[in-house]
Image (cartoon, rainbow, N blue to C red):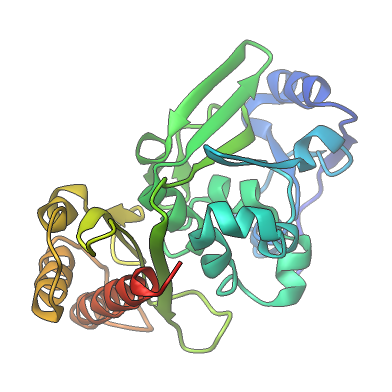
Length: 292
């Protein structure tokens, strides 16, 4: 299918993109990688009157790493983030998750900001943002504001972005622990398809092998990606056993609200959530326990 007719403008700067969004409002959509927007337009699920192309804005492609974590501009290509060794050393979970995103062809064009702004609750990058507590810097002609991930995602394909705002920069915090482990796992009909359920975990250990910090997230089993800070807090200060991890996975899965669809029932998705959460927690703990 072909998309409905639209007008096209290529922005040369962030200010120009924001001005175009302010001018056209709800009638405009930003075009970055186009891996979600273009198919949705072809299926007539979206009918924007204007496309504002931001691909040529150099400032939106930056990737920076320091002791606090990583900052990725919204139009940074997923493949560039996946291959950035300095970023992988500071925020390793981001690279682990990107290996599950689509196929290499889609990651060559797909942008980190595009995936977050699309806000598919089964997508990998929103789950990592939710688990790590990433911060989104949003910009418009009115100014800038910063929003944390748990306030950014409002529901399936819904964010707190106003019609005249664009996602400019994402800040991915690094954990300070030297003994740090992480894991990302998912189940899909085929590799590269949308996940029926996914799980991410990150664990920090002290020199004695006790947990200093634990994070667990689940995707595809709720209206937004889910994190469970109240549940994971009970492992802090302990040397978790396999039974402890299984109990945490079970309790997290019990808090999910998956939907039925053509691919899986809600019961099956909740079962997957429990199995994948336990698998991710075990893998993250094993990763942290290796000599660093």
